[in-house]
Length: 134
Image (cartoon, rainbow, N blue to C red; front, side, top):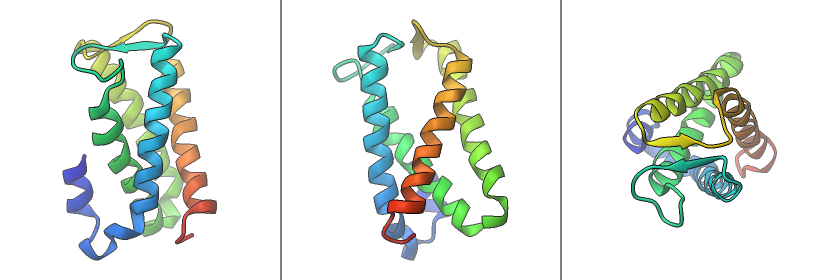
């Protein structure tokens, strides 16, 4: 995902998304910790304290940055942009479950979709009201 971020966002604009990327990394890590501690899911494979850092630091932050970048670039299509990210993440999680990378304990695809609605909603709120560029 980082490759996509650096490929799609013009080099001169990367710093404009720093706050969103850092916030998304923190949000993803906190959500992941809560999910693991409250036994909603478990990652199969290498983890740090049961948390998947490749997901929290390698996938989520550039997705948050790209979501905000496309919202700013195409404001008339903001809803489609956010729905794309919510749907793509819910589908991606489903694929990870089928491939054996994640195991749902007290979690399911419906909960995941609602979670991503809230997750990207919080990123939207952070960008809209708390970003230095908003």
